Image (tube, rainbow, N blue to C red; front, side):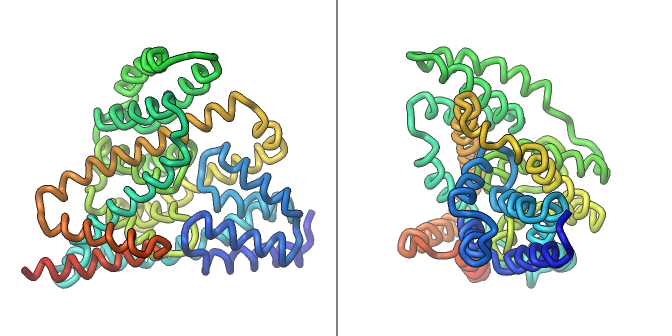
Length: 379
């Protein structure tokens, strides 16, 4: 059992990181590396790199799981809980305050124009993530086929959970066979159509327990970039359950760019819009809880999983399918750009800004969308 001084150190380190951790998971992990390896020497460089590698093998937000892993290594189970909670809390608190403000004032005429152009900027942000992640994920023709299937199945309305897990298993099985071509992959994927249809649910009334279970399911199967969360939320809350509009979803993503810490704190904002304070708490606990469970359960055996060919093939397939789901969201929401020239102008502007200043923080693209949307609404 770790002493109070050690636990206080863990809490202080990760609370501070939670306050200042802007820039996405890669930046968060770089900050952790400086703190726990270089400055405090809680572990050697190779141990930290091993943790970075194995966090890709389990669902959940990578930077949050890295914080939980580091806390566990430093101070056992109490350190695991403290590191995770302290890293998440600042983002959840800030997002919760913004959610209250949005619920109170977001629909008023003097505020709403600023949200008009944000949707176009967010679509560009997601599109950039698709391009960046796709270059890494699609490294063979068979993976490209899986990614294309994911796009098609998502646009056809199949649940994201069925698509990501089903095609992940297809990739794990068929990519192990030497010389297996595209046709067997397509044939093996067909049963997912039936499974997806069974998994679809009609719109139902909101309850706190149901909201918790929805976000718990998402947190348990969320592989890949945090932006994949958008595909799951769009599928579950907009299409299947009808609890959310696409505009509120895009606003929530934009707000997530302004808050520090993990992008999954977007769940706090969405939960508040759906069911107030209780909804915010249910969504937040639901989406982050699996990360604590997975780290506690799998930390001792992660080095063995990392060396498993089957797990490696599954991960390759899941990563490319995740990118496919994100692309489907871009295509679906991008239809609105063709219907309003002002949104198209904002999207083109966001693209050019990002192209000119490639390292720019994506929060500035959201600022551009808000200001440009406000001015264009005056026309």
